[in-house]
Image (cartoon, rainbow, N blue to C red; front, side):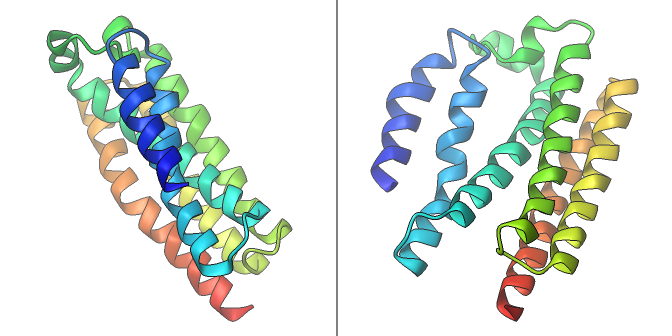
Length: 174
């Protein structure tokens, strides 16, 4: 898993950054593999729970990155990076992608109870945190100004630790 993280980041994602906005999705893979590595190290098995943790980080990264990219789209353009925000003058696609992935995050958090990762109450708490994050993404989708993008970005820095606290606390009670 660690080798896959290194290879996918260094030799797939990094070269793609200058050629396609899809690089962000590719780059989200190595970004989401560390919890899988931790799960496998702790349990000795690559299970559905590990992939759910992967999905949570994967989905979280996209609104996190898109909000940051919207704020710094001119810098990305000057650097020659083909992020979505560079080729999206109105921000509609960037904000829509942020909202869709924030909603996916909420669904993935709820699945924590379905796969036995955490009790239902803790999965609902994690989903509520990500639901609030989705509301920030929706506000960005309807008002694509820098202030909304900054609030979404700052919200991303808060929501992931809150999700992890709910998941870990719930898992500890199993």
